[in-house]
Amino acid sequence: MDRWTWHGGGLAAARAQYGDGAARWLDLSTGINPHGWPVPDLPIDWTRLPDESDLKALEQAAAAHFGADPDHVCALPGTEIGLRLMGDLIPGPAHHIRPSYRTHGDMLPGSMPVDDPAQAAGATLILANPNNPDGRLYAPAQLLPLIDQRGADGWLLIDEAFADTHPGHSMAGEVSEGRRLLIFRSFGKFFGLAGVRLGFLIGPPSFLARVRCRLGAWPLSAAAIAIGTAAYRDRPWVEAMRARLDAEAAALDTRLARIGYRATGACPLFRLLEVQDGPALFDRLARRAILTRPFAENPHWLRIGLPADEAAANRLEAALRNG
Image (cartoon, rainbow, N blue to C red):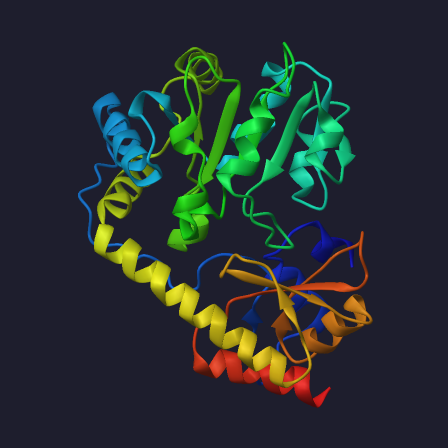
């Protein structure tokens, strides 16, 4: 189970373990939007290095989407890299909220898990909003006081990888030069284009300067810059997708409830199930070519992503219902 409890998306490993039968594999192991932004034919020049002005345009488009000052936004070649860079830039001690991403426990040396933000007073604190895997959602009024509780060297680091579905809960607009607040945003999850490898750090300009120094020149590909800029500017698609995801998540909850499963979590891109035996249910579904996400730290959990269409939702319901 180690491969699948590490993170989602292990479809090749699932095929190697369970084989390819008559049914096509249904990957519900991630929280990536199954309705990806439709990438148009963009004018990407593969023969030259990306221009600095194009990178700036991307950061401005992303800032408008986040509700942040463009001077506070730094593009990254994936949020994972940005999180890992913090180990060289932020001194300890540090704490991370559990449960959450495995990376949160690895990114700062010696980071200790806590169940409540109050347990991390005076130190750097890492949390996700919405949280993964339980979908817990913090209101800004709950997070603002945490900034002042960090102490002289501490920071509040908020991973907003799934915040695109909850714009009113983002803290991006609260970042300023005088605040020890850093926000991480992901592109691939909401826009359904994880392979682009694009993320952002929102922080004080003086801190971003240190990050840019480590990233070096040309941190992003021309394709990532072009796709990200166009997608963030597509406001009609963004608004329509938020409504669509909310409706489809509610429909999934109804399906799960009528066969005896109660889903938890505010984020519409994934649901967490409390089950008697998570590994056994994972195995049962995998034998029906449905890949989900179990958790080594809690054998009673199973996380499922949002099915892409009615046929996929029907397959999931039938597999859960029939054993």
